[in-house]
Image 1 (cartoon, one colour):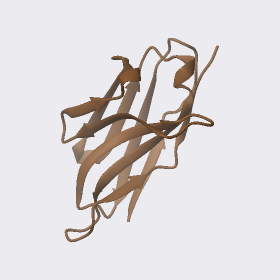
Image 2 (cartoon, helix red, strand yellow; image 1 turned 135 degrees about the vertical axis):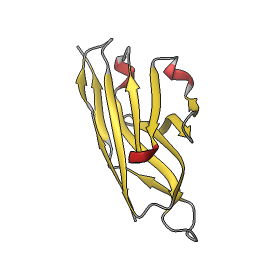
Image 3 (cartoon, helix red, strand yellow; image 1 turned 90 degrees about the vertical axis):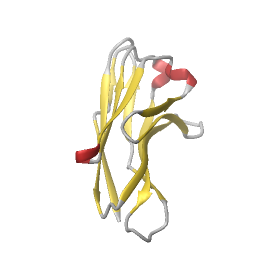
Image 4 (cartoon, helix red, strand yellow; image 1 turned 30 degrees about the vertical axis):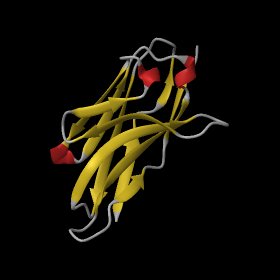
Length: 121
């Protein structure tokens, strides 16, 4: 099994910054991608950013160059640096890892427990 532990959420004023971290542990054979999703009240969960390998990244349109996703392969950790935060970025942010726990296991989606990000003055 793979466990994901997130940290770094909190309350920040508009225009401020936060850095989210997500460490994967447990039985990890390989990781295809690591990413961040978010879900605001009453809305569906949506992709924020994803990273494959060390440098292949994709961002949602609403990011508009404000967020940066990065990854430390040695630590199986993914980060999301969020700058110029807006009130509409308020949501629960979830870490996602797609990978295998064993050599012959199925490719599986793993989710963290979520961390609250609130942008408010």
